[in-house]
Length: 203
Image (cartoon, rainbow, N blue to C red; front, side, top):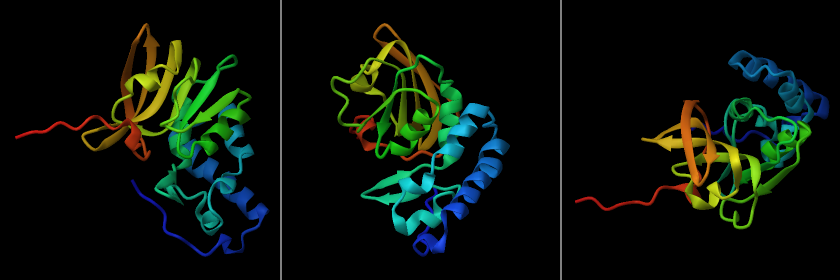
């Protein structure tokens, strides 16, 4: 996990500057890494990432790194969200839940795709759902019943998954009461302590 350092507030950057930075992000971070769906790229172009970071960090909003937001929260790199949404294959008719802190930028991308989306904090999932697609803005060690319960039958879950200290993109589908996850490529997402596996004692 790499986090950008602070730079001067906005560094005098205008909206036009930010628009150029957004286009550069799409061309140099997303396209070259296999995120090429036209609808998805249009969503990234439509959402001003700088609006989702504190003013002192607007100058690094489009860096290919996590951006610290304060209070232990980070905004993942745009590529991580591109990888998640590519794996999710959102389609018309999906009802989407974004779980995370913050989750707002990922939710805005889903909205830009024209899909209904709700956002929930990791510890506030009771009574949520059912959703056909759940996106976790962060990495989990285990899904747990509360997260699985947000999914409709055959609903999809896309998240980061922590195994032996490595975070990988994971996708799963709910069948009955079971939710199984399959790991894909490594991804840059911050672990969410609410989904940590219970610790066991060893002697």
